[in-house]
Structures are given as C-alpha cells and as structure tokens.
Length: 333
Image (cartoon, rainbow, N blue to C red):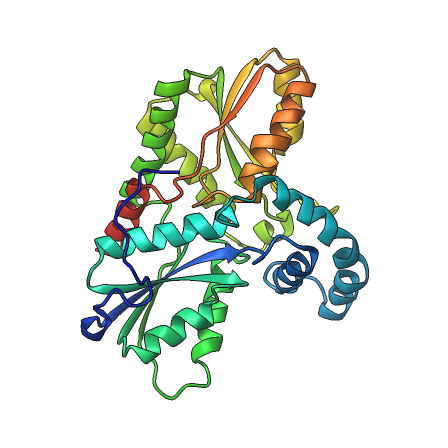
C-alpha cells in the first residue's frame, strides 16, 4: 500500500459539493462485493453477460453462461479471490476507491466519484450523485489506459444508457484512453525504476497485457496497437534495448485464438532458454486485482519456476500512489 494521505471525511460530499460544477467519474471493471459464492456468481453473470465482453449470439451465449459456466466457474473463481482478498475487502475496489479519494484532493473543483462497470459502487450511483448535486459537466475516465471495445466502450455504453431517458443531461467528456499521456507513462516508468532500485535488475523485463480475441483485433479494435505503443513509450523512457524486454498477453478465455504471444508458454520457453530472473509489469491494469495478484504473482510465478526458471517478481500496478493520482489530475488539466 502506498503512503497514506489525508482523505476527505465524506468521500461523496467533501463539504464542498454545493459550489462544485464539474464531476469526474473514474470507472473500473468491478468485483464481487463479498467473499462468497453468491456474490461471485452475481458478479460473473453481469460481467460475462455483457455483449461487449463476449461477442457471441445472445441466446446461445446466455444458455452456455447460465447452464454451464456459472454453475462451475463460480466456485473456482471464489477460490481465486480468496487468495488475494484483503482485510479491507477486494483489492481492486479498495485501491480504486483510495485512488478516487486521492484524485479528489488534487481536483478541488471536481466532485470525484468511483463507479464499477459491474457491481458496486455502480456507475448509476455515481451519476445519481452528480445529478442531485447539480453537476453541470461530467468527465468519464475509464481506468483502462488502452482503449478496447470490451472495456472502455462498455463503460461509455453504461453512461449513455443512464442518460438516454433523461430530458436534461450535463456536458459530457468521455476520455477514450490515456496511454499516450506523458505523466502516466513517466509514473509507470518510475515505478519500474523504483522497484529495480530496491530489488535489483532482472535478466528480462516482461510487459504483460490482458488478452483480446484475435477476431476483435481483425475487426479494428485498437487495443493491440495501443498496447504495443505503450511498451514502446515506456521502454524509451527507461532506455532499454530490445533484448532487455518482451511483450506478452495473458488472461485467455475459451478456445478461440487471442492476441499472441501468450504469457505462460512464453515463460516456459524463456526458462528452457536459461533465463533465470524475470520481472513482470502489467501496464493495462490501473490497480491490482486477480489478473495481477493471482494470475501473475502466483500462477505465472509457479509456471516459470516449474519450467526451470529461478525468480519471477511482479511489479505492482500504480494503485493508489500519489504519482497515479497526480497523473489522473494532470489528464484533466
């Protein structure tokens, strides 16, 4: 956890909403509310039921989801969450809320709210708060540095659906992506430098990004290009040579082809080639959740060690660091 900062007593009011005319909605993916099977199943149903996430014929997919996937995957996913759950609850929710609060301290003219695309605190709850406080301009910033139709576009869908039946809406500013923002790039580069100053240099630095079905890439989703551009920018800031880093994609789901190269086979190959120590950073995740804390820090580490590798270290996401809040505030300036 990053160094504490003095946070507002009431994150939904801050005692100044009466004079605020701008709202900032930070949106993350979402998480189960509680560590039990019912809560996990509810979250998965909402998440995997989003047509932006699974682009298959609706009747076919919903039948598969409710008859096959949810009855079996809920228990398995619960055990994954159990490995990373914090005393404060879900790490993704905790760090996201702390980040929103710290960003609010840097933007006193804004009412800053957190919304989850799936689950609570909901996007609707945040937008209701803006409406009740007379907010005249709303900026929506999905906490996905790289745009994808499966993530940021889904957030925008939810915002548009909220305002669709209303007769008066605020001015809306939808931030598509921010992987090119120099403040964010520098914050990521600095996090790598700081980690290596404390823990030493690896044989190889790995950039791992959440995967995407190749079909969506072929249809024009820009996520792959954004991911590659992210790596190029951070590598330039670090002054790395081509042999000092690699890019992989993680988190495949189903049997269809996804963006390659795949992470776990890549780790096995590196270990077989004699690479002993790797460090992995995941610049597509604003804060840590199961995709980093379990899939990378636990499962990918096991894969690498079992294949003969020596050390795998996960470099944490920016989470609720001051540098992260600074970068977000700067994006709005």
